[in-house]
Amino acid sequence: MQLSLVIPLLNEEESIQELYDWIASVMQSNRFLYEIIFIDDGSTDRSWETILTIAKNDSDVRGIRFSKNFGKSQALHAGFKEAQGDVVITMDADLQDNPEEIPELYHLISNQGFDIISGWKKKRYDSILTKNLPSKLFNWAARRTSGVKLHDFNCGLKAFRNEVVKTIEVSGEMHRYIPVLAKNAGFSKIGEKVVRHQARKYGSTKFGAERFINGFLDLTTIWFVSRFGKRPMHLFGALGVLMFVIGFGFSMYLGIDKLFLNPMGRLITDRPQFYIALTCMIIGTQLFLAGFLGELFIRTKKQSEPYKMQETINIIE
Image (cartoon, rainbow, N blue to C red):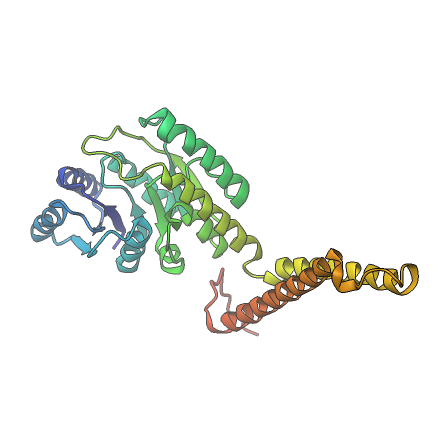
């Protein structure tokens, strides 16, 4: 199996047949051994019936149906689990991604050694205010935060080596950050290709303004996990020590003031500085313990999970 096409969809009954015909034409003209995996993410129209009809007539087509809408990340994860091709290509079902790009994406992975090739919709046919400008801001923030130099993180048209999709786990709303997840898993050969973007032919977009809010929240999560996920003590321990030192400093000040400078003054417990000191030391201790427990968890997990091997060399003496 050379190629697996993973296509998540939601209420795209008008475009599925046309997309399939276009993909089949490209695959047959290039003599690929391929499979198409449609993932119906809880559609309420006749999308699933259309997939069943196509699958009955073509053994290279398979379908996965969710009982309700779980989201694009979960749909991709289900498709990745089933994908058998050496190269896995994802694309949207709304006909805005062009199947004519597939052969070159395949050759970039199979012949040039890339782990991931991400599409870049350099010229877009979306609304400037609702999609283009927010996307540019989002992509700039993602580049700055993740260190992955891509222009279009959210492009649905991407190609992966099979090992990549079998290693990473896409959950929540993390489908936007698959290249970042792959980089964190040790797959560093990430490239980009300018792809053709087409205006939506049927229906309307399934994503609203809230996706950008969710996107930035997920980006914060990715940044935090990427930077401190393997060394939580560096963050929580440092903050804990800082808070404890501040609290201890207030305590020393109150003790010296009461013993030597103003012994007849107010009780220490009547002064607001006492509660600041107490709160800081308690919070500092809790943060330090959180970092310590995080380190224990990471070390325990490392003993049970496999590592991605870059290369194995047999040495004969």
